[in-house]
Length: 107
Image (cartoon, rainbow, N blue to C red):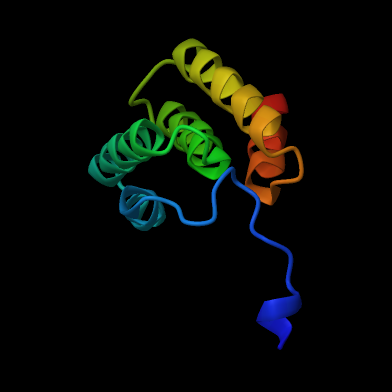
């Protein structure tokens, strides 16, 4: 009954592509190679479902983490993250992931 009463998930569509879950999995490994894999999976998820906002928000978080460990420059990460967060918030302004990504971009 609780599931029936719960609001529909934000993120632009009800079901994210499989690559979205793979991106989360690899991000949580927190190694250089896994961050690169995570980025690739989120980019695939965005290509498969461009209206699913949470993939864009997670991509923003991943590229900022990549900059933290020296895989890309802070400037490049900032540009990518700002663009993806902006689009994610446009698609799903109440998305918790997009709000968290926005907080990461602003710090």
